[in-house]
Amino acid sequence: MTAGLPRPPAGDAEATTHLLEVRGLTKTFVATPALRALDLTIAPGEVHALLGENGSGKSTFIKILSGYHTPDPGGEVFVGGHPLPFGAPDSSYDLGCRFVHQDLGLVESLSVADNLSLTTGFPTRWGTVRGRELRRRVAAALEIVGLDLDPHQPVSALSPAMKTGVAVARALREDDGRAAGLLVLDEPTATLPVEEVRHLLEIVRTIAARGIGVVYVTHHLDEVFELADRVSVLRDGQKVVTTSVRDIDHTTLVHHLIGRGLDEAHAASTALPVGEDVVLAVADLAAGPLRDMDLRVRAGEVVGIAGLTGSGRDTLLPAIFGAVARSRGTVRVGAGARPVAGPRDSIAAGLVYLPADRKLHGGVMSLTARENLTLPRLGDFWRAPLLRRRAESSQARDWFARLDVRPADAAERPLFSLSGGNQQKVLVAKWLRCSPTALLLDEPTQGVDIGAKAEIHRQLLAAVAAGAGAVVSSADIDEVVALSHRVLVLRAGQVVAELVGDEISVATITRESLGSGAATQASAA
Ligand SMILES: Nc1ncnc2c1ncn2[C@@H]1O[C@H](COP(=O)(O)OP(=O)(O)OP(=O)(O)O)[C@@H](O)[C@H]1O
Ligand SMILES: [Mg+2]
Image: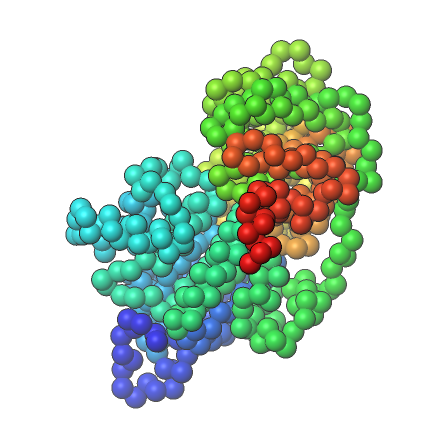
């Protein structure tokens, strides 16, 4: 069932075999081609994974489908046999296309309910629905994704995982206008804890079983094998392969992705000795759902933080940094006797924070990548009255080369024009460059491709080997396991387990995150 799609015009029978057909789609930004002559088809009920390194053109393709970008002349897209007019979000919607964008596209200041009634950015479809009916629809939309939220709270109050849930609910909600025919998800699991990834994959399977075609973008290859029927890989804007998932293995897929094999040997923190000096001391912290938090991080140590949504994991790092209010507790950095109070104070003391939400708190999208890099310690380059631009530029080039920020001239481009994963690399580099005493990193490799992720880990561990201490909070348990000397597992606002050495494993962290009751249920099932 390609529910809700208008009937194709007579005589266009050939095009009806595909739910989505893309022919020769090209998009050039200024002089750089982001997408080159893409051909792609999606069948009704098919889950099609779209892979590619950071900056390979995935989001560009999706933004063309949604009407946000207009492609170069010559390309064509058909949805259910109908030509898709370009640059027209309403037409895309009317043809049954639904999107969860990489940045989710939620309006932070609006309530959950208001966000659920937005379609293409304007309150059109549900705009005339009132009162009880609207409440029913909002509840139904949230129920599909299994979210139990107060619809009146602002989206800004939600954790990254809950925001993803709201964005998915919005894409899938029922609507008088048109039912969905094609669902496009751009890295929906980038910040989702493992339990919620599983839940999302279930939802996608159910959707596809109803005949809806799904385009699924991810950097997590295991999701491809678990979920997708077919997979396409983009490299530098060009499609290098489309194949049935049954016909490809992990190693071959990696080769298509990065053009070589991946050095799977993980940079491991455990090889690094932990020093004596305490570089970060958190005592008796309470904030949001968190209480009684005590944490001491030593020079050369990586402390991992794990926990599901609602565990308080999202609050811990911003509370230590002082970006969210603490109801009690003190934070001391390095040998400083005086507790630090807020973000400015923290940075001055050598404590830096990479937030989970890069668009909202992480970077200044209108500034260039270089300006974002050097924002925190511009003093280094300031020789009155001239900014020593050359020194700044060469340092930026150096860092961007280390983390492989693309394209090659990314330094002088505004941050918004970089792909999601490349923005993330810039923000990681920004804090590593400062040689901080201690780093607080929330989801440090979200949206980063498999090759760049390994490089970020190496650079982080180099900073730690040089004497910094780090706290890494991640929904990606593999990442927590790979990086941490010690792991704290949070549940219901408290530390329920502290794991060291061999105790640090995906299985143990998952079990402790779920709690013994849930673990027993899971193993009984
Ligand atoms: N608004 C824009 N202006 C100029 N260039 C852009 C713009 N948006 C994207 N680009 C460029 O187009 C190319 C493809 O970017 P795109 O966002 O499609 O990559 P992606 O495959 O989604 O990567 P990621 O995995 O990091 O999200 C990149 O080189 C990027 O810098
Ligand atoms: Mg993208």
